[in-house]
Image (cartoon, rainbow, N blue to C red):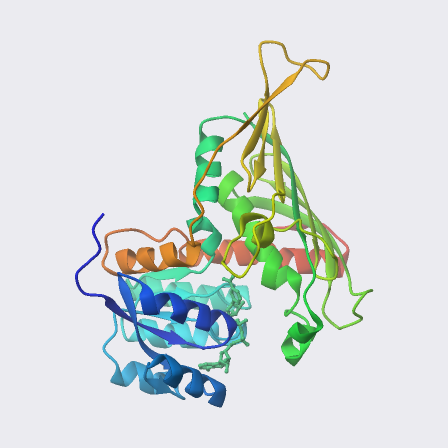
Length: 347
Ligand SMILES: NC(=O)c1ccc[n+]([C@@H]2O[C@H](COP(=O)([O-])OP(=O)(O)OC[C@H]3O[C@@H](n4cnc5c(N)ncnc54)[C@H](O)[C@@H]3O)[C@@H](O)[C@H]2O)c1
């Protein structure tokens, strides 16, 4: 498809870690361009100046004074509903960073506002835009594993000590369940459907912060599959999507898998897309055949921006809509509730 001639002006509200990643991509994207940045932090003003983009301390002023085609909201979770609703009130399509909000009640408010105004709301679960995940989805739809039965997902890696300098990353809600595992939950929802119930244990034994550093999670999916998810940000390990898939250029791409889906007809790994199946004869004494589906490496954040413009112009429907992102949030919050109550939680 040819690129539109004029780039759509897009604002970024919140120019921290992920906001700057979006801005870097906006600078060179053929379909969209950075129109303005809003972030009260002085470091963000300096950053905006360094890339030649107008800066506002107050996002409301940015929204009043800047012609825009869409907005990317990359502020802390507890501000998502307020900022998102302000954009929707101005009829601006929104790409909301994940999690859609920090509570289900806030998420409902935001989704209702978007639906009532008929303004597109997308959630930044960028893995859905990764060609690997799209190929995995096609393989599953083709029936390579048959009926999914058993899933193992790993999200184990090491966050450096400097990561924990901002206080919110040491407090409840700032840990790997809501920051990282939520992406794995969304990935599995995208591939095998809705989560029905959750059991979980969490631990803060290594770092000793208020927030969890490790979690073990069991999930039952509506399709009947059972999943085991392991997450820890204290371990020296390569088994996580970011490193295995090479999701962004600042991650090395390691030749490992992080997600394993076993079914009645075969099994599939991600991100390498290894498929294991039987020939004519089935049974554990028979030889399994192995094949690997090649995929090209592409930056899902860049594709997400192309999609943002297409959605804003009504040419595509959101790959991850507000209500879809809200269901992922509900499952992630169920993990926390299950760990707290030590009981299974229905989603
Ligand atoms: N999709 C992903 O892979 C991914 C990765 C990282 C973070 N995130 C999400 O992005 C959001 C931001 O995370 P981060 O790691 O970039 O955080 P961060 O703390 O690095 O940056 C947040 C920025 O928002 C600014 N801010 C706070 N309140 C604001 C307001 N009212 N108006 C404008 N700016 C405001 C802060 O000054 C800060 O610069 C979170 O929701 C997080 O979950 C998503």
